[in-house]
Image 1: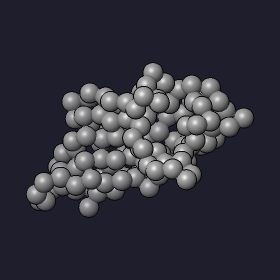
Image 2: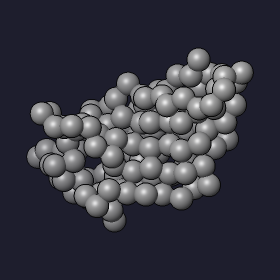
Image 3: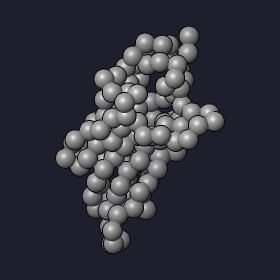
Length: 121
């Protein structure tokens, strides 16, 4: 019913920048919160940043001041601008979207397929 397509991952040197995108499509009536999570090898998935439908962001302490989350409601897309990247930011990044699906009661959480971010010299 709803598809999420992520893009923008890759290999970058420490101190570099990347921008992730996640576009939602399908039977969307409206989108509530959107966010990014990440999972490093051998670790649990953790919150990176979220943004409300009204545009209010929230960040984990580990990325605050370096990452910026934003959204384009007209495009059903959430972005993650990552600056001053560190090796410890290396992980698979997943977008997370809370969707009100057409003709479906309540909301449903959807996850993107994940995109690899590797920070290494």
